[in-house]
Every structure is written in C-alpha cells, then in structure tokens.
Length: 413
Ligand code: 3PG
Ligand code: MG
Image 1 (spheres, rainbow, N blue to C red):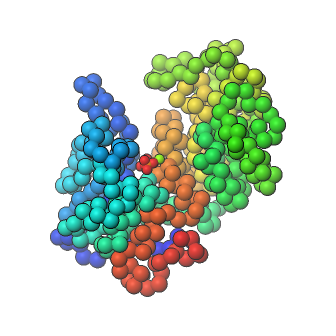
Image 2 (tube, protein in one colour):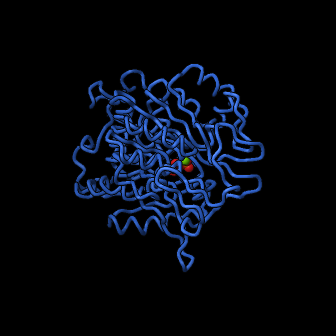
Image 3 (cartoon, rainbow, N blue to C red):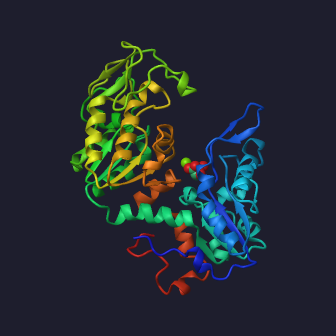
C-alpha cells in the first residue's frame, strides 16, 4: 500500500503565497510550415490544468517548471520550453513557466545548490509531474525537504488508479505487455505474472520467450542474454500467454516510416490485410531464417482479444508490433479495440501504447490513460517511487499526517 500523500488541501491557506509546481510537460514536438517548433501532442499539458487552476483559484502565485527532452545539462535552443509555454499560456493564463530544468547540470545530479536556487522565494511546493516521479532529480525530490509540499491532482489520480491495480484489482485481472526490449521489463513481468490472472506478451520482447521454448526467431529482435531468464519465468508461471503466430517480413523488406496515410497495407479491425504477399506473411511460432517478425498474427490477436473481453480489470503497456508501419499495426489495433470494448476497468500506461490508442481514435473509451511511461511501470513493479516518497517525507508532513505518512504502510518504501 502506498502511504498517504499530502494533497493540495493539506497545504492550508495559500492565498497570496508563492507556489512552485513541478510538472511533466515533456511533450512531443514537431515543426510547422514556417519551421517553428510546435507541440504535437498536448496531452500532458492538459493533464496539468486542474492543479494549476485550483492553485490560481485559491489565490496562489504559481511558478511552474518542467524538463523537456534530454539536453546535456546546458542550455540548448532545441530543447527550450518556448513552444510548451505558448500552449500552457493559452490553456491557463497567469502561470510563469521556468526554462527547461535540464539546462542546469544540478537537475539530474540532484545538486542541493540547484534545489536551493529553485525554492528561493517560494512558500510551498507541489509535485504534479507523475511521469518523472521515478527519477530522483533535484526538482522532484529536493524541494519537499525544504518547503511544505503536496501532490497535485494528476499525481493523486495516477496513484489512486495504478495503486488500486497493486492492491485489489477486480478479477480476472489481465495484463498485456509489449514493446521491444525485454531486459527493461523482466522484473516488471515477473511481478505482474505473480499478481495477474493472465499475462499476455506481445511485441518484439515475445521472441526472447519463444526462443526459450526452442522456436526459431529468424532476424527478429531478441535479447540473447535474457533467453534463460525468460525460460525460467515461463517455468515458474503458468499464466503467461505467448503469441501463436506473427507477421513477418521477408529478407530485405524495409520498414515503412513517416505519414501513415501514405503507406500501403491498412490493418483490418481484427487483423492485418497484407500489402504485398510474399514480402509480408503470417508465420507460426517459428520465424523462418532471414525473416523478421514485426507484429503478432491474427490467431494471436483473436486469442488476446478473448482474454481481454473476459477481464474485469485490464492493464496494457507497450505495442504488439511496429504499428508505425501500417503492415504491422494489426496486432496493436486489435488489442486497442479489445481494450476499448472491454466492460471491465481499463488502464493504459506507457508512451507508445498511449500513442496507439490516440491513433486508433479510442482514447476516450479507456478508463485511465497514464501520463507516465517508466513511472507507471516502476510504480507497478516496486510499489513506490522516489517522487512520492519525497512527498510523504516532506517538511512537516509526518507530524500533520499523525503517523499516516512516512514510509508508506506495508513497507512499500
Ligand atoms: C518521460 O517522458 O518518460 C518523462 O517525462 C521522463 O523523462 P525521462 O525519461 O527523460 O526522464
Ligand atoms: Mg521515458
């Protein structure tokens, strides 16, 4: 159980007070016709509005801060927050937004001098940057040591939604995990397999599991160093469901990039219609030599769809294939539709699966879409995050919470 976090109400009277708000406005950027940098997806900016509005309505003077991308601890115009500032000022006028926190080397180093500089002149601190709560960066873990602090509305909601998956999800609880890299997610897969009724595995990470069972993977992405660990997990857990078939590309067939609408090979509702037979084919659990698996196949999409349809709780993270290429989008589309149609409670975390439900126009049919990728997964794996711990241990909160704060209940810290 995640211990009680201080909330906005716990800040007390904030009329006329200066409040520093850490947000995660790390949003995708593009360029418009004139070459100007623009925000291409404002999801995280809109998610910050309730907290900012609440603070302004209660008379606070608000200074917001965020990181944007991964600049190297020095000012870099490619990572300036200017395009974000523009969108933010349209959504919530009257909020000052500091320049990219990662322009200062002290941010990633959690340098106390940088923390002191950040909190200078501020009366309170609010963390509403859920997507970065898994990083012990200066602006995330530093200010709570020095200022009365609280979780914003987004952090509050994310912790409630994801925390309830950790505690007592309605069953059957079905988890779908995809994405390319198994190494990043092995610990998570083990903890989810222990907790969920069914763990469905798609994406390139599935090949490290099929290889552990002795199938061939052709040229598909495999983490050779993790095959044994995948095999051990399969041996330990009987509730892991692997793909029965894949969509694979022949030797020499390149992935399509760029605008979807100009690519051949639109996926159907439950499976792909293959653009060029002979170039892209449905294969079984073994991928032939020289071929590369880029998506789950239609039999797998149907199997996963049935499991999802029968679930009372669904968690989905990570695409089933390279859906940026329409020929390999069918598996991800099928899972996205199944999750959207599921009558149970549905939660999606992780940048790529969130992008997928937006692309398929299904976002409003999902109960909770997390703004955090790594943060949501680490919360599910470890039951806590550095940014949340810092809030529970924040200045004066232990005494005010009367023993409800601190280390977080069942030793979650
Ligand atoms: C994210 O987009 O995952 C968060 O903003 C965290 O960014 P980071 O992975 O660069 O720390
Ligand atoms: Mg990330």
